Length: 109
Image (cartoon, rainbow, N blue to C red):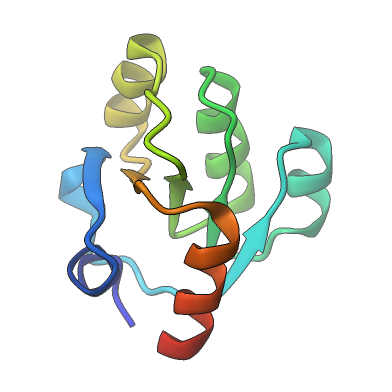
């Protein structure tokens, strides 16, 4: 499944990295502890987190994740949006909570 398909099926908003929505999604990892994500997330994962600071861009790049989803309509910091656009990191936003996103992702993957 492609990130662009997730955007459509989960009614997600593209916050940054619109040019990279053709990445393949192979799994999901949910965590807010950045060091844990760097250790456990796998390439191709969707990463669900409430973190919105600029450090998520570096972690996403290091982990080679497909995209980051910020749940619950949490606003992403502008510095994060700018850096993620620069690095082609896809950040998506959802009004759903992490659990609901994970359940829906599971049924799609």
